[in-house]
Figure 1 (cartoon, rainbow, N blue to C red):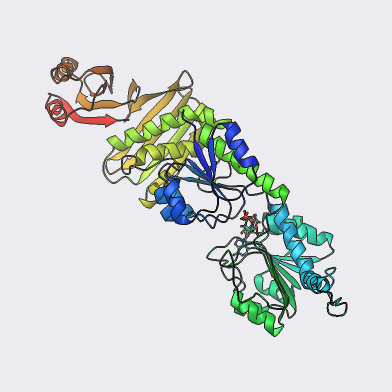
Figure 2 (figure 1 turned 180 degrees about the horizontal axis):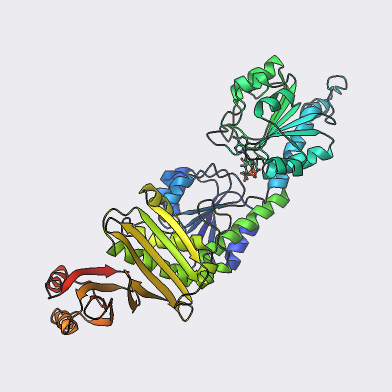
Length: 527
Ligand SMILES: NC(=O)C1=CN([C@@H]2O[C@H](COP(=O)(O)OP(=O)(O)OC[C@H]3O[C@@H](n4cnc5c(N)ncnc54)[C@H](O)[C@@H]3O)[C@@H](O)[C@H]2O)C=CC1
Ligand SMILES: O=C(O)C(=O)COP(=O)(O)O
């Protein structure tokens, strides 16, 4: 296997490069590239490791013809076009916990910096002004902290704030009452939070819902004298409205680590009294950077070298231990998906994936992805396990997964059934000797075969002499038969023939085969 090639495109702890190398990847560290420069080189890489500076746009993904995985050493992935990456079959993963404590601590640091105006007091003191009377602060003890977003970082902020003897109220539509009790916070709606909070801190991702969540209107509804901290994402606060609210004194102070446009080289807020900022430093501690660099390099190496999937945003997780166990099932699943897609016709609206025996014990999502990849491959050249579920959804294909714990005749079985206008059509397969995928049934007829390379599929009326005639036809056409498999519903009934051959079967041979007496269906297959 050639070594996967990884590009580290943003500044990252050197441990990341070391792990990639130690695990068996080739790695280049090339940071600070413009989009055009990145487009020129991205085609050679299998993996791209980034932080927030590199914007992975559709243009970059189009040029990334070998890319399999994007790893975000950090949490926010709003700099990656995930739907487009998914449609291209590229896995996107992040490190959802590595920098959360650090970011929560930065929010608390900024809250104190606002409460005591530390940056400005520091600057004036160092100018020799000794401004002892100009900086009357406020205590945080007993004050209300309003959390907008109570996920990983928000809950760490809450625990620190409770330790500081603050009262914490939280607005988060996904916060359950039980979790609120566990966190020691009061769940409130946004209006209540605005009315009550002395300090507000934001910890949500930037989404269509959260964009400008603190807009002019809501800032006006906030308690007079509120102090606001944003260590989450620029774009959550309307920066122009915030400037006006600071100027009017309605908002007593604001601290931003993040801006709507980054790098923020200019802003209406710069120079405003009671405004402080940092250049997106929320995650910038030695500890957090080591954490996220190690994690992203481990996760990406696992994926590139073993197929293990951790913390992917567009694919189900698959541990490095599970991956080898699932590998033969994925091969079987893909072949069955491919077979049913080549054989079933009409308006295909539903696909059912059944797992029984040993297969029922396994993680079903990757198997489902592999069936869909095999199925969709005949509709699109660029399909893989990542984008297959998206393509299936786009085409309105319903996917159902069913598992049966009991074993049937086979110790392990996958069955794929598609609903067609002529009724359900199903194929099934097992593993021989733990890892050899083997077809065992087509459309209710038992037949054992390896699904490999070029094959010919024939449905005929079981009758003497048929096999000889088919063999002669192939021989006359100069086509070498590798394997020959037969199955039938009953003696003299409908029968199936599967031949593996050493070359693509020409159309005229298919045509001749279809004219042999008793033949109902002939189809060239490829796997
Ligand atoms: N400044 C920095 O350097 C860093 C910033 N971040 C950012 O912090 C943010 C939060 O990160 P985590 O806590 O790890 O994420 P998380 O996913 O654990 O929590 C986000 C919370 O926001 C809530 N939420 C979503 N939509 C909402 C809405 N409309 N209103 C209220 N709440 C809503 C969710 O229910 C969830 O509980 C992310 O945007 C992340 O990118 C993370 C690390 C470093
Ligand atoms: O993890 C996040 O979401 C962050 O915002 C950290 O960004 P950074 O890696 O420091 O550019």
